[in-house]
Image 1: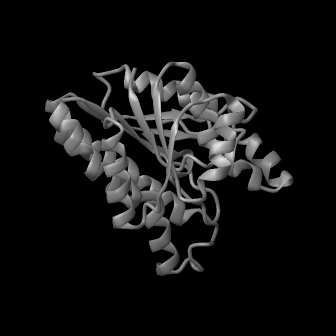
Image 2: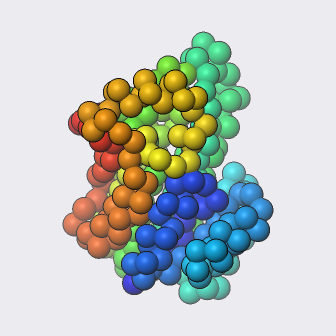
Length: 238
């Protein structure tokens, strides 16, 4: 099975996908910006064995230290760029500084990690880059222009990587998930949740464990590259 590095591993979405990948037999390397204690406690409660390291992915030195740690543990086969933050602001109120922060976490953290992972994957002639995006990149709601822009950049970046490294048996894909029963959804007021649900043809919020199963599909799909996989209950259809 694969050795997988997951960024943003302290968040709600990660907690939905980690048990799935563990159950499927993958070896997990997890990194989170916050203290590792909460994540370590969660893993112990779930009976999941995984290596954990704290790192601020907006900091180049932290990323270098992270990948030194990854190599000391045997390297990686899969990088899941899951780190991200949300920010709600009408476009006429969104400052360039706020936009820059969104890009630093949602986009440039993936660039920093991918640029360190890809030489390792090229050397071993195989690997997977999997970026985690959002339905908002395709169907923004009010106040999400910054978040939509950062996630759209992430999807374009994956397509470019796919072209660059296809000859080395490395794939790069994106999972754009919709409103799942995990993570940032719990920060949305209940009345707004009901309005959002009306926009989803499936009539419900998704099971976030499906993201884990989709990651596993992409790991085992060497001819799937440069794609965005949509998990949104029909809320947006390409």
